[in-house]
Image 1 (cartoon, rainbow, N blue to C red):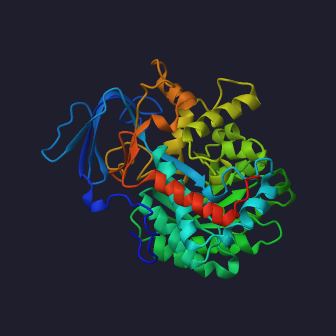
Image 2 (cartoon, rainbow, N blue to C red):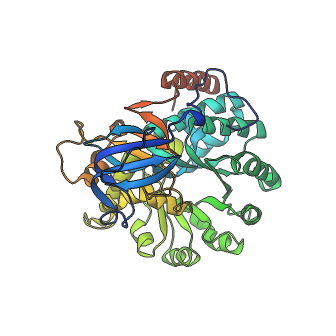
Image 3 (tube, rainbow, N blue to C red):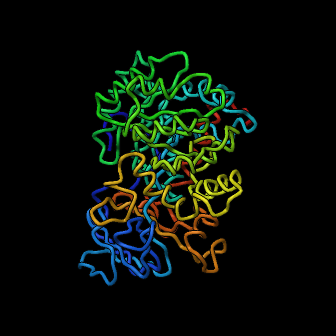
Amino acid sequence: MLTGKRSPAGAGRPAPAHGRDDSVLLRDADLVLTMDPFYGEGLLGTVERCDLLIREGAIAAVGGRLVAGPDTEVIDVRGKVLLPGFVDAHTHLWQSAIRGRGPALGLYEWFDACVWTVVPRIPPADMYRFVRLSAADALQSGTTTVVDWVPALEYAVSEAYLEAVSDSGVRFVHAAYQEPADAGLAAKVLTGLVAPHPLGTPQVATVAHPDDPDHLRVHAGLARELDVHLNLHLLEHRTDRSADLVARLQEAGGLGPKTLLNHVIHVTAAELDLLAHRGAAVAHCPLSNMRLGTGVMPLREIHRRGIRVGLGQDGGTNDSADMFASMKAAVGLQRAVSLDPAGYPGPEEALYMATMGGARAVGQDDRIGSLTPGKRADVVVLDPAALNLAPLGARPAQIVFGGRPENVTDVFVDGVARKRAGRPTGTDPARLVAEADAAARTLWGGEAGR
């Protein structure tokens, strides 16, 4: 647990880490999508009729007829599908506070109405409740890692924010933003609260301001000083082309293998060549882009250049943590634009983007993203024997085109069960909903969403 500000009373905490089962055997899965071709077939590393052993928070073995020790919990997963936990490569956990709001607003109008005027009005206790709700939603949906771009917050609010993330048990990347003059506050949060956490990874967040190059210069310098990734939204709206933002990012020393760029829609071929040359990664947020009407990422051109790509949910403009919907949209948008149903990405590529692709985009593919022995045990169990997935067909395609969060029966993060037999563990969803509802009434004063 984080030190510092205590959680609001009654918020609901997961079981403490020392109470977990150090050894769990998932026995006789019908299909395991390891995302590691060394352990299975094709891009998804597919293995049929397979066991998976978790020991002390890590993947210990993948294979048939694994032996369970005397203290190992054995879970029968016959008929089920195992896959790595989803990696949400770009989100804003606090934005459950604004779900459903601004449904007819474009990007910058939505920012004005639903973001910049709202964030300063959220006190620590209510920030905890909004973040806790979003993290629980992500976990029950099968997302085990979130990359969270966090706006400028007072230190006490950051403490509450990170307490909520910690209490949820989700693995998290915390990209902290502050105005350049307050960059030291971001460093304090990242080094004091995020870096020491066993499930936390610090990043520096920035914005590509057309009129203020100091943002990029100061934040890129801080990211280099802390040796962490730089995380920013780039070329999301067509008006962002009014400034040469990619060149400014390059001039500020912020473009390289430790750069994560979100959206990247209104980009030129030459800029894509530069991103590929510099080794930057991108997060594709199809549902958010559809909701705000900002455009369609040139995903096929990005893939053709070998640029690392993960899938992001983007918080309040997705309105849920449903990675299945994002995978389906990632496939469908490209087909709708290209009129080519056989091009990139297909369902298998979308599954890869949502798991190993996201891990690669955030530089954590040595720890998560695949069910490779030695990696951390972030595992999802999915039941295809459901009205929306039966009868049995091409399972990767069925998962992407027909899967829903309710098909996820079990979720493990670092070997700890965060969802078992279809129910979240260590928390009371009804209480989280009630507390977030109360916080929203305080924030919005009973005002209906618009």
